Length: 523
Image 1 (cartoon, rainbow, N blue to C red):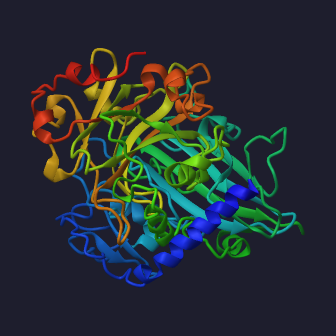
Image 2 (image 1 turned 60 degrees about the vertical axis):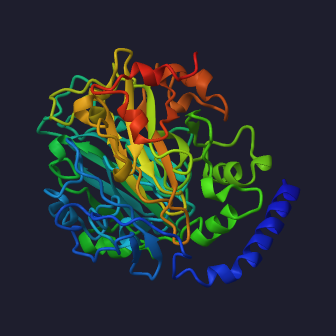
Image 3 (image 1 turned 90 degrees about the vertical axis):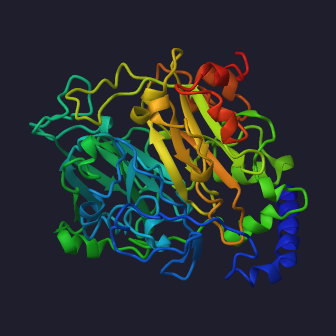
């Protein structure tokens, strides 16, 4: 392992040295002809009124970091972040919870505010990241009401953005006299729905205490806590019609602090702040220009049909892309880029040099229906709680272009239960890539999101969240790279290169999905 790391360090050093002069010009886009777009925010602008990027997406954030923001796609039915709710959502914050985070153009255009390191956010989820320091002997208590939404959870993280512990809605015991509406058989609109959660320092014990989440840090060290809010009923607000959880701290001397006192006692340097990126854009660009790397088509395959691949950790992603000879056969499943412990991910890369229009298709797992405010959960009979498809930029930029989640994808299902998502830029969108013709269309954006990077790069990400233990064909079932097809069977999504819009339009309306699925490998 030491020898491998030494070789990588030498190569990286040479790459950085050779590109040092190029880095000095990062204020420009190095002659790249970036496309222009008309919309980079929700209608009416980002909720905080921050300035728009240039027509090609270029904008300096408040920390002086240059970014290329993706265009904003048109609003879809059952979207979560909308022009109707973004401004009122932005006001939902406290001294402990700094406020909602989403993709660019929703709450802000300032990358130092919408992003937290590299997160590639799902647009059906609203994130609230916070940081805190618990003194020795102290315990934090969160009190609130169970949200009216599909899924709600908390994750703790280390400085690298790797999840340390998690507590999901259905695991939480309600307060005395209350119920947990995420459990089957309990009305989702129940009035008495309060909970109490403890946050404590230290590693996760073999036997967990109920309603407790662990930081995995020692007292006095900074810890990170993220709240995730998936598919609130009717997109009313990102919290699902309840208030933010309150926070109080019981100190070792017996005092209990609440409100601003509790916030001040637990304040941390990175609360509400942007973290340094674990992959600096310049490093990513340097790696993309290594002599054996096809930087113009990074990670993309010329094959017309490719499966999505399981995500294990960020180091494995970097090795696979830039140092494939050093890729591990059994990488550790530890996540990264502020991933959700309740979720596993699969992804594939796109190059517009190989094709302007792609399709993602796979068998749809059974998931609950909740957006319309259905009265009862059907979690026990579902394969998983949540599933989505997203189009994003490079991991080093953390930008998301567009997403669709399970309830939005159901109208695309064919007779075999397969979903169909068409991916392209707006200029390449086929005329029949519409809901009326039976498919979902997602905008792949304007490239990797990096100044001096690729305008032709895109990635597609598939999320599986809270998987039923009896369902054995999710990303949780993939234990090693290369096992995706055997583990997931027909539920494994494939990326199909349709080349251009004329070839997709030849499929008619309604789209002849059989002519797409026939291209898939036989199980």
